[in-house]
Image 1 (cartoon, rainbow, N blue to C red):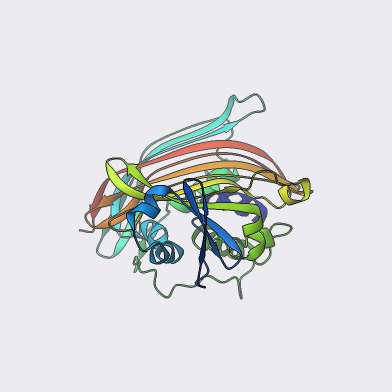
Image 2: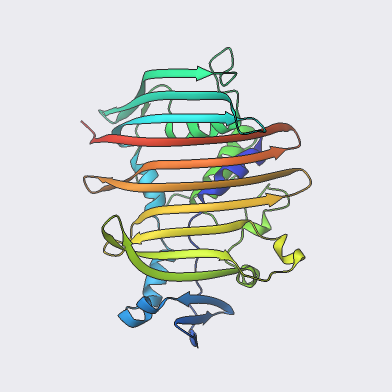
Length: 322
């Protein structure tokens, strides 16, 4: 099961970090390529011409916690959500589905979720009401809760993820959190691709191009950080690619993440996956929260049947704690 947790959460990788060593420039046409510790980063013309302190900007991107914070904020607000999940057959038809409208209540330091409407088709649910598909389990681990939970907060400073002392499902959940919120580092216990997740090292810079741009998004100015594989990679280099494309938009005024989109794929002897994901943020008061997540994935592991699924999470009617 841990391989499926890995496949699902790989779609939630954020931005890459940068070395703090002194940099140099290579001007190539309209773009400026910065060489940092043997890695190359491309600044688009608008970034160079603006005269901003790009090094400080990149370090803020490196140390970003706003993405993690946005999901932690879901623990301390009330909201309503539409939850749509479809499992597909080989030809793309729907073989099982799940729809629900849920409302999270938050009061007196506790939260609990109320199901306002629910419909399922096919074998999406087991007879006991549990999800029959791992795609559904992953969705529930992010957006759905059971029972009442108290004493939570949205603090991210000082929180560390570790698999030490954990086993079974608890270890898998911790790996999920590590990949979700601290990507780009080697994760223990993941066969074949653990080292390929280290997007901070020199080897990664041989495989990927990194670019920083500036534009508008939904009427606001944003910095855009993107990563994609280098062109012309040979067969053996391509075998080390996990990220096919990734784009993160940061609000230019607050440096909060406003959206991320991903496309990832990998094939190994025991499993394979091909997934895409989009996440969009909004605000409730001064709190950043996710308002939409769209996922489409196809994955298989040696001990599990292949799953072809897609889902959309739509969150709205956010309210602070009563």
